[in-house]
Amino acid sequence: MAKKLKNEKALLKIGLELVLDEAVKRGVVEFDSTDSHDLKIKYAYRLLVHDKKISPIPNEQISMPSIKHRLAMWATHQLPKDHELLK
Image (cartoon, rainbow, N blue to C red; front, side, top):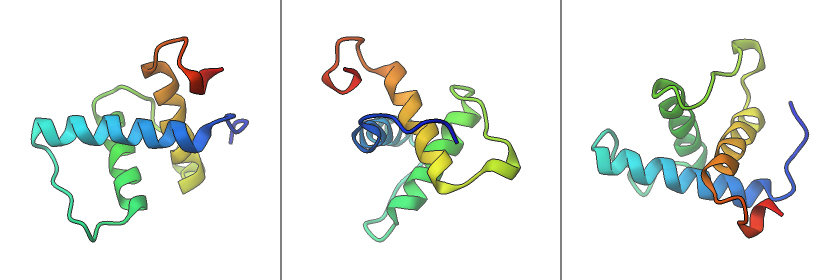
């Protein structure tokens, strides 16, 4: 896995919100209150791969930490360059 980002948890949270909000607006998913955080993270990753917004992680390297890192990296490209989490 690549080097951990400085604000990785916060970036993951923002990235997850962006992806899931868009997915709900598109009508491709509905989450229950009982759905786990990890399930939502995996879904967001798969949706981004399906939409060709990120490249897939090789099968032998797929793990929850690597998926979280990939989502956080994606989020860095969605935020304005002067955003406080990117400093």
